[in-house]
Length: 494
Image (cartoon, rainbow, N blue to C red; front, side):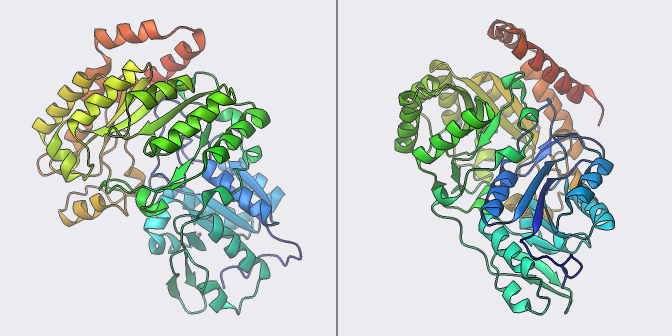
């Protein structure tokens, strides 16, 4: 079998969890349940998903290590030196669509200097398991939610029994090539984890926590917390429901509070991003959660995502009292027909109301827009530009629609011959377009993205408002650096 070259072990295996370095020294935002994109404003996000896997493997008796090579700015040679020192028997790498080619190249280099089983996790390999394991540097793919699967797979590999292929095939949620038969194997799907409270907290002691920054928090490092998993909506451009399931699974308020208290106490971080689109969906849960923050006098700043149709003034005011500083909304488009074709299930009026209520509650708002969804043309783009100025959020980000494999959008684009690139490295939303629409070319979408950002941010009204908002040196310097990075992106040639 594929693991026959690892050294004979009496104790449980040494396992390395890896966010591979980018060979061009670029930074990408990556999380196991997200699609991934290039960082454009200096942001660098924690590898919380890998820290979850590290925690469950540690609890199962294995010897883990975690290297976030991107955060630590490691070169390939730096990484290989650490590999030789730790001598892992398995390497578990987090990959995404735009970084896939880079990541498997890194794994191939690792195999040249040290024999190790290689395992991929993430949205890309979950969507394309056969393609992923067809690369000679990849031994296994874990499909979708990985915590239970990784422990069972490592337990099997630790036995080092080359003849017991039937037991391997009974492990749910994996894909591999059987080197004895040449057959591609994808096993039965694994049920999603319930209750989520049974998972240990992410092993953040393995992360370079001081390296994770985003402009909104200035010089302060931040942590990410995942209070829910699952997404019931059918948006054609998103893979969240496929990776985490269509059912929303919610951790108990007390469990999330305990994790926040641990973050504050153990690593001294008081800036948190809640990584879920469903934080405000269950109002009863949210109000209980917020009440516990206030009752325990937990002092930290936080931001979150929300759907525009899942907020009201009462909850927003309580969120602000509990430390919420910014809410990001997926507005997506200023044209209702585009929203309907994308199966977003919101109305334009919902977006207007959400931004107005958020401002009334004293919370900053970020609106995300997507250009290039099915039906997009010059008029619908103009509708979006007009709408984003009308609702006037505090900040916006405009992405180019990317048909990630595993989404309905990818199938639609492929069937209609809209794809202009099959190179996965191009499949990221910042300044790159891999799809055209019925009426617009990829180049026209890139031009429209930059136009939208310029027209929103280079307005006297916005600039004056932002100057009055900034009150201390740290956020000013961080936002200036972020702004310069964005400006360079907007005005550079393709």
